[in-house]
Length: 169
Image (tube, one colour):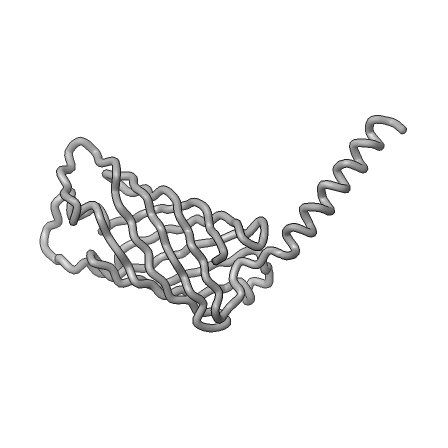
């Protein structure tokens, strides 16, 4: 056998294994589904860590909670614990079944936090039944403090981007 023929067979075997692994992965199963996500968080003036938990309440609806803590700050920002920490209750419209790709879930949603009322859009892709990756972007719709915000108060009142690992529970 030639090297090209052997490589083709190896590539076919790898593709079949990937197909089997991906065929069983499902990003959102509906009612009773539970997801945990963790990863870095990026916003102007700081980077931190974010974690979220979502619970499926229906075929395309989930509710959850997410929290972020800003670890690294820009030099001009003096922030205490209350400025660095935020927790949000959230609602997601999980569009996995609408899109028709079971291992990919697009989820727009709304959140109520300690700092604002906001919106987010995220996506999850699962490589196996238990593990996947996510990316999410969020922004405030209405800030609770309508006056001029200090740089520390701006931390959770601006565009934020998160990504990381997603797990089925």
